Image (tube, rainbow, N blue to C red):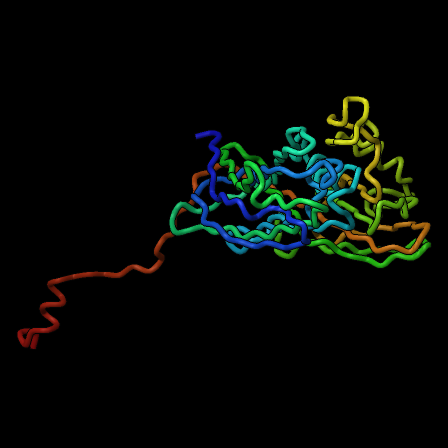
Length: 326
């Protein structure tokens, strides 16, 4: 087996409505090497509900497999009518092109979120995935009950996955308008190396002037320089219903996502936490999300083995119950 797509959950209620909400659920999983989790959201809204890419409606997303936290993301700021790339989409697409996409439409929505995992789950017993999704409120229309409404989770299995990816819980920091040193905590018991750190501001304002990654730079680097290194200056694409050049339905492109910074760290070891020096021009609250990777492979899922032998000897049992032994 190489690639296999499996639908593990489907409903018509885990969708954005006119109220902000957090929704949680759990589903069972077949065994195998999980390449990625794919969330597909379909439904209909009004043109005033979502102005740019659909992923702007998400305020948080968390996935836990067999008790292991594999993806833990929370927006630094946002709303459904944010007319810029979403913070979730920007982070995912910085980890690989087309991880956050949608079929363009002013009112009909079909969005895809592909979360890298690279985790082997056993074939014996029942594996379990728990998840929580948070949505910002839509202004006028609930997607629940709308035309073609559907929420689906697929798992892609792949024997040839080379890395396991863990999106750890963010470290938050209340910054002032000065330079300060920040310690970003790494996920406990997560093997591997730090591939990147994702920094989010609490607004779209450019409150950060420069960032020094202490273990990899002798000097602070400007925000523009980091965006040159991480590929942002080559273009960040996003769905934009307000793109007037094509009658309001088209992809737009920018060189920056306000208040969001993706810093590649080229697999720093996890021997210590990450040390940064951040220079801000205003007081703000920052969050730092570590992206950890480790080598893996598509070896067969291990079965549970019994470690203690249980000798059975009918002759000995008969003799033990017989007076003949005396």
